[in-house]
Image (tube, rainbow, N blue to C red):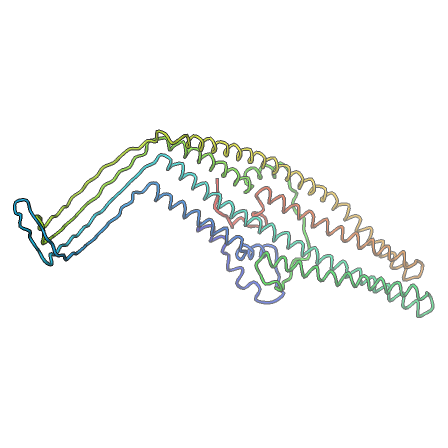
Length: 448
């Protein structure tokens, strides 16, 4: 637990990161801030502490004896009238005083065979809470990574629209010059102005999209919505994932699968706990007593008892109305259901990996095509602009080339983002997302 808290409390990265506006923010910094500030992770860490506390309480309750010490004193002042067999005359004692003083130490130890199964259950539940904390970490890393690259994508789209607007401005200047010199009609000039305004409107709309993408990233990092920073301006695809390695990692490290397996173990241990209640239970007790009483009335003026006594018993359940049998049977049914759930999750996990990997491979193949298509569209637009400037092509030809370039650029950067998005999802499914971008030093507790 201490290791988990220490690795997540990376406060040195969050204290001075945004001391100045528009400071550079790379993905690693964004993730470190999220790990330190994200409230879902804080909640998960507290749940780990609760589970570990329950486990420690279980050790004390199940295997340690209980020892209680009691000290009591009482006083009385009464008017007493007594008659004795050998003296028929009543005896009257006014203001008779009595005092009692008791001191005792009682120790009780009870051993029940099901205690071992209960302790193993608490250990499994503690592991589940640690895995859930890791799930919160992985989801935070995946969410921040996707939001970060989404912001980069929208900024790239803004640059594309800005370039498109610059081309429209060039076309508008040419059309205006041709119109003023009488080389073209007013209609061409007005059409160029309409297209320019349309591109300007798209650029302004993209600014709103960028603002919202920035707010989404700030939310995941638990920062103020209007926090400003500069992000990287490119999406780089460096590694190529393999399906076999992804599947092997997933069956070993996928945290949801590990949680399902632990839950199946808990159900098995619950059945063992119920079966163990049929075995004899041992109870031992011992106590020390020091009891003193004084009285002005009666045969005994003073009575004092001091010493030890001890004993024990063994109990065996002989019959409980078949309730225990039914509970054991129900626990077996629950264990079988959870076993089927683990098998079903494994099938679903493998299918999810295959679907995401197919999309990943397809996007990588499309990237090559989109890169070639962008190069062709860019050259075509340059030629169309020059032809339009020389007056040997119509505005429709130039606009068509311009729109083709815009489409090619958008498809190219979208393809890059899609590859990165599927890469993040595949690493999350395989349980390895936390180890991307040089985070090996942020080891969480290992759950075998």
